[in-house]
Amino acid sequence: MKAAAIEFRQVSKFYGEVAAVRDISFTIAASTLVTLLGPSGCGKTTTLRMIAGLELPTAGSILIGGEDVTRVPAAERDVSMVFQSYALFPHMSVLENVGYGVAVAGRPKDEVLSRAKAALATVGLTGFDARLPSELSGGQQQRVAVARALVHRPAVLFADEPTGNLDSHSSEEVLGLLRRAVDEFGQTVIMVTHEPVAAAVASRLVVLDDGKVVHDGEGKDAAGVLDLMKAVA
Image (cartoon, rainbow, N blue to C red):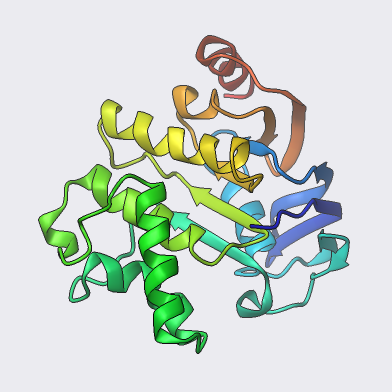
């Protein structure tokens, strides 16, 4: 896997006259796990979607790996995303779900198979190849979603509220996988969450409020994260 740094240069996003993000600038080093944190409506998901190319900024520039991708379509950015809703294809097996993107990219069948199996092994789901998503627990489905994101070997991995639908045990497993993606594979991971325990796995916290960056610093434990959230509530 390769990793890439991300840079925001005076980025703003307006919906009509409403500012979702206001003139924000920050840099995320490659091979780090960063949490975007803040109250509902603060602009964190909009920020994530702009990095992914799902939203275009109204002003400013976004760079990934030193390349200006501000107007580059999402499909042409070297990124993958894990959603709160899992977003798995219900009619496809676990193996087919994980390998889908690689197959669509036109890679040989044996490569698709080997990469999908390796990704499933990474998330601890070896032997689950033939199961359907409906036959898995919520935590297992989210681990499949992480495997599907990792199989692309993306420059940047996004996680949008990845533990929002999970119990505490499953949340710990998924957060552990994201941490492992950084520590063992050198992945760049950006996570959006409102949960202090989830945010505490990050090495860096970027806190937004009313579309602006109000804190950018080293990670904290859950109590410290909670204090930050109270400060901007």
